[in-house]
Length: 422
Image (tube, rainbow, N blue to C red; front, side, top):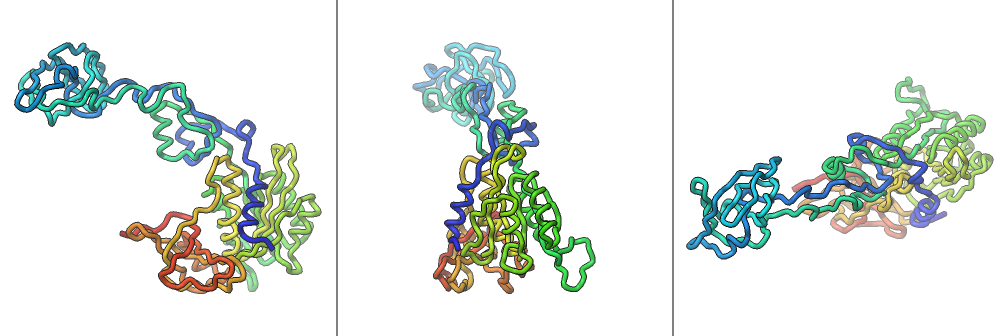
């Protein structure tokens, strides 16, 4: 049985990221949010586009004001007013100034802006009361970015700040990676969909829906293939179809050692290479990871297969710890595929038998700049889905650690944003 770190290393080594040439598509700017950039963006505009003022004040020649003071101000003639968005109409000569507003284009001849708080105006004259620094409050053309050089590099996720940059650069079309396709199937004769009446002994297939949501949140496209009966022929057909239509396949159930757990032997019969069969983790010990050989259908890349446990909490913990990093790497993100861990102070005693790396679910709070972990109430059984609601983190107890006492620091896997309390 592999350790968690060994399993993570094997999985990430198996992932071959999408190809920047074969696996790209062009999208409009407003539909690019949370997509992964597949090609460099080169802007055609300088930033700033022209020399402009960083302050409301007066555009002047530094030589005219370099020795002025409150007692001996420089008195300049105001020849025009320049609001943002208007082109200056005058060349500033010795003894002249232009009233200028923030963001407005600097007039020719002027090289410095004096903020209005350091001036006094009388009619068409302005008294400069303080000597400024040379070129003060002037934002020079191309000082932020020079046209023709890379603006954004491939492999980054496009979020609101990048959208703002791209909009300002008038980049209306972007080349991004296509979304990875992740097929989901659930095995088990006992499973029914949420809209079916529940008969004695039956279980609602919550995994199909939870995994689809997690896949979409990770930026991939979930392909829901539904429930498959515990019949080798049906499972074989479903897996073969999933492999032919996706980049990653997730199945839940059928990977333990029960009489109806057929997944591993079916994978081998279909030509898969099984790399992982079990991991020393709790919950989630039964975990199958396999690869199917590259084909023309799969763009000449292996298809990665995850056989997740059927228990709902085990399936979700396995996704957060092992599947999500694989999807991130596959999607074309250039770095930071792995889980995000933080150190937090535990609000309760956290217990484990110490035999396997143990993940306890709960909520992460950010209190006055420090993280605190709140254990979810109720039973921490892998079959108890109810107290998983509002989970945003998993406390990690390493192998050999049976107790983390209240107030001690625990490593926490963050699965969504912490709750912020002041």
